View 1 (cartoon, rainbow, N blue to C red):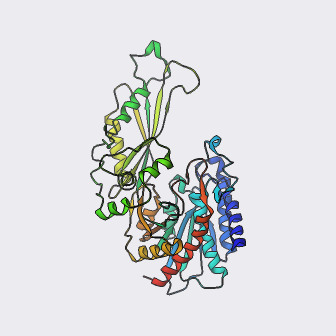
View 2: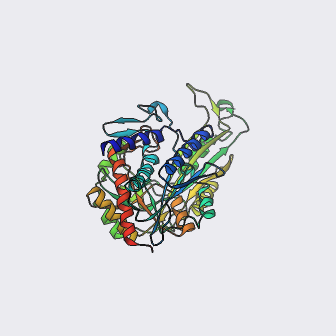
View 3: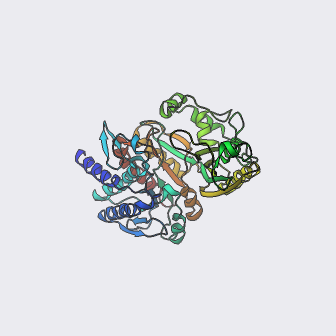
Length: 450
């Protein structure tokens, strides 16, 4: 067992060394090389596998030999990662994996290379044992999740017949706490926009022209301040109209979870938790919509003072959405609100970014119960049933294009630092993920085809 885990870790470290940053054009060859590595791994296991080119980065599709009378499970993951910036905050190079006290530190270790490789190795171990798999398995591993999966929907549509399955399995989310098995049955959706405010044709001397020409940064901050009221509620007209209220059972289930507000303060390092009144922190994170300003800029950024009225200013804004909101409707609402609140003296340009609708499923369905049994058997603990604040837009595409629901079985921890410096993933969770894959396939196989 120790020797096998050493081999598994060596493969994970090889996987993590690829700087497969999908958003960076300079890393395009690295992303492609990483996809080729994934394909070779599937071929070495005896699966039928191929690299499918897209307008962006490739999709890797692999499958076991199909057998009649068995359910088919599609396992999804991604091999692309977020940029590693800021590099100076990493305690070791982000693409040189480091193992310390049972924790793997590297970009992509939790999101998503460690989690998807656990599933791949689970299937490999089952095949190597000589036993037949209890299900047919399909793998779809893409290289564009971190940029919104712009080409995966087209791939699903084009290959819908080959991708016919009863359920999708994804481990690209988190466990509620160390050792606590977690089934996620809902994800918030996402919408993204960039707002650019322009004023004078060139930067102007703020002493000569100040007071006569509106400063675009002043205008932008006034506009952004209208997005929320003084207590933290979203102030965009109609934004809450489609929001579905929490069920009583959800509030009761979440209130007993070990992810307390004190623990959230420890994880985040924030001095206090704030947000929409009337809801707990978990309820605000998982079941209420948000609008966040992710970046803002304009004017002089260097040392010292430069007295200018800048030509322009910008802000990057995202919003998280809950059932039954839709991303396109939310984008229109926010864009219209900002336009109506644009002061005279500047012009505004709003550019839409990637988006995806919220996802919700039934944790008491047959597949939901199978997942809970597998999680309980793997971790030996009562299963937490949660929603999650993050977004995986392709989950809704699986539902709309393939007509199937998704089981979200997180293996990362709340403090995994995904998208941040020093991203990490416990070896124990990696090893548990391999066992979880085998337990889940057994449970689904026992259900038979639907």
